Image (cartoon, rainbow, N blue to C red; front, top):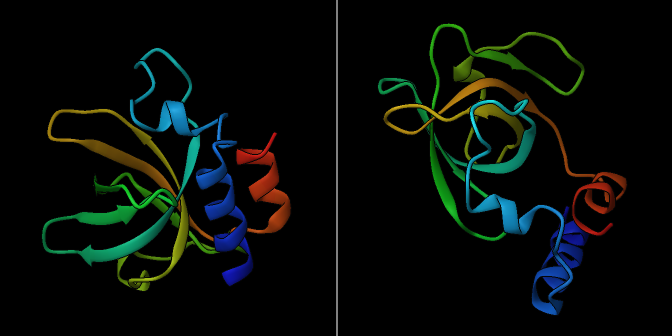
Length: 122
């Protein structure tokens, strides 16, 4: 896990993080197909139905969840919001909404070197 943080840090500091970083600051238009984004969970607040998520660039975002949000582990098995912990790495498909982004699907899983290269270093 430390290895991909080092690679990503080098990419950010070296200025080669082009494909997703520019779009990471804005949400896709509502008419566009939502795509999943990689985050590290900072905290889970099941009482407020939200997660505090951190991007690899250290920018945080509050993500709302509702009864329609689907949760899966890395094997595709359904899990619940209470199964997530601070420090878990997740892929979130979301849509913009009033009061912040709403998670449609949250999938727990690691950032592999292959995934890192595909998302950030092309």
